[in-house]
Length: 436
Image (tube, rainbow, N blue to C red; front, side):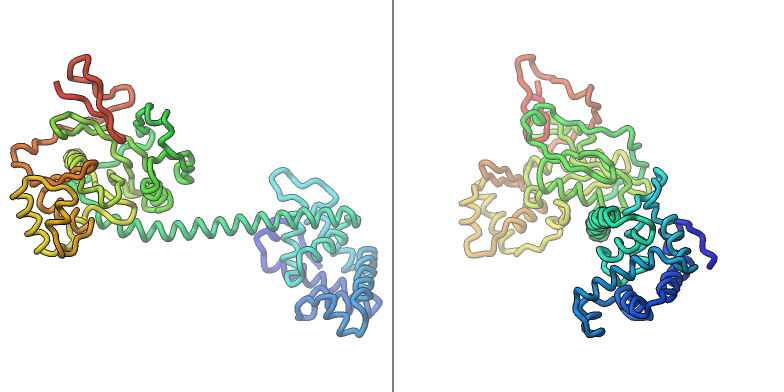
């Protein structure tokens, strides 16, 4: 038989090589002079187009005990390992070269146990590895102790392979789910102006407030796409980060990469958008991550306005999301017009409503948080929490125009413009400077 002991052909499951090797095993068993040896090995190894049989099945077929079958198998393997018949010699030679049980494999190649595991799959696929590997190891020249040790090592490798395959399958599942989720989320992105290229990945870095880091408010998750730990401030943000990490449409992203200046409550403030994502087609998307019900809060509305101006000046996209739902959900939500009329009248009459007053004004009308948030965005009402206050839309000239957003590098954060004695006011993820 002409057969090259070339391991890559086994690793790649080359059809010609596999068929010749299997024929070689059958020929070696067929050369054995004792018919009982042939019969036992044929049954146990799954030759003659039949699956491998257990000791119990072979014992039942031959009318002998299970222990007697085991003894006959051991004797047959010993005879096969010492046979001078041509096919037997060739089989032992090829297995010794392929498995490397008698020599050290090259550094780049698999170990002897890994090779035996693959050979058992190729030659004796219907035989349990714990039985096939010691047999192949003995035929390759290993003594019984080394054959058993190689079988134990191969068993560990097999478990690790199964775990790796399980993790890879889970990863592929996450990629498929993230792909579908991003397709839906991408349809919700608002684009402003002519699209401009995304910032180079090397120029992006996180602008974190060191005092918050020191307080341990952050978590970290290792991103396989970026090959580094990514910080997050909430489980909602973590879900968004994982979406970007597994969605193949995203080339790279950066957490809190920018500092944007905006005005709120008579103060000049700075906030850090949660994520900046670059798509594989070179576009740039600013992503603000918030629970949907928080998107209608007055401070978040002010931030969103500033982000709109920021993206408009750069041709970027913008989306506010919780990882699944978006701000547009609130903007397009259908609300009972009777509730809108009732709350508008109550606001006009009282000028400000607390939560109990909102509930009282709604009366028996259906009232839910998302529906109320939708009205706040549509009508331009102002909503503050802690304490809860709902106010009518301010006059147009009192809204003010958001100042030109400024991108700050870590060593160039906004300086105070007020008196030296005025301490900066800091809120969740934002730096606030008192206006002089």
